Amino acid sequence: MKIRFFVVLGFFFILCFVASAQEQESSGSLNKLVRENLKLPSPELFDGNKGRVILSLKVTEEGLPDSVFLAQSASESFDAESLRVMELIIQNWDPTFLENRPSGDEYLLVFSFYSQIGKPDYTDTQGLIEKFIKKEKFEKAFDLINQEIEENPFNWKNYATRSEIYRLMGKTEDSQRDFMTAKQIKKKVLVSAEVKAFGVPRPITKPGTIVGISRN
Image (cartoon, rainbow, N blue to C red; front, side):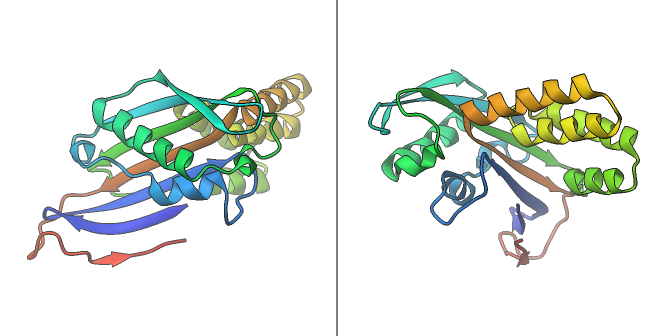
């Protein structure tokens, strides 16, 4: 996850990027390529807009990209940004991007955008869920993971986490169902990426000045 602090046009906000790879990230992974290039379009930044773009990528039997289909549109700028990143993916394509998935199939790439200017705090929801699980506060962890799934139903890790919570709560059938859902999403979704902007408008003396950058 990457958190950046910028000042743009006289306002202070936090830009947060979350990319969920379908396997552990490596130096040449698809997830890394998306994480380093996906941006929140400027026209949407201060409008409080959000949207999700889903692209379907057909891969040949040789493991090469064949065609791209816009399966779900959001807005003109969100669509354009997603297609821009998709073009970069094709230009830098490596068959290892499939992460041992079979060639000759179609896969999804999911790009989610959130502009939440006016909300100053970034909440590490996943961190809170882990803390609640460790403290055996399973109901609180369950409520939070449900919110995460509602916000992004294409992240297999959310279902895997809820599966574990169900298991700890003694709900075996529910746990198995979410485990299978996570497995299916992991199989079909190459990458699920989110980019978010948070912040409180605050005038500064020199618009456009970068006041600091923090990454982790």
